Amino acid sequence: MNSSQNTSYQAGQAKGQAQEKASGLMEKASNAAQSTKESIQEAGSQVQLKAQEAADATKEKLGMNK
Image 1 (cartoon, rainbow, N blue to C red):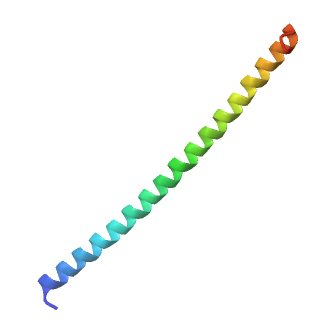
Image 2: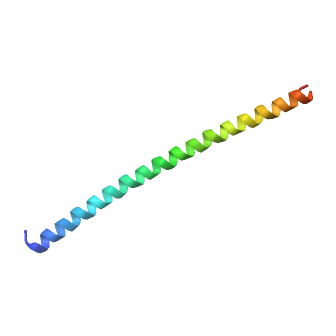
């Protein structure tokens, strides 16, 4: 293998490694985004439940649960 071929080979290797690393980073970012989405949905559900409980308690105190 001459110098030019060796340089091309090394450049190809570096490109492949960079693409693999980028793919791994994208997967990590995607997983983090999915986890965040799930956390926000769970928090939203909890807020909605607490709001409903507060509304029900208010109705009960005002005698509106008939």
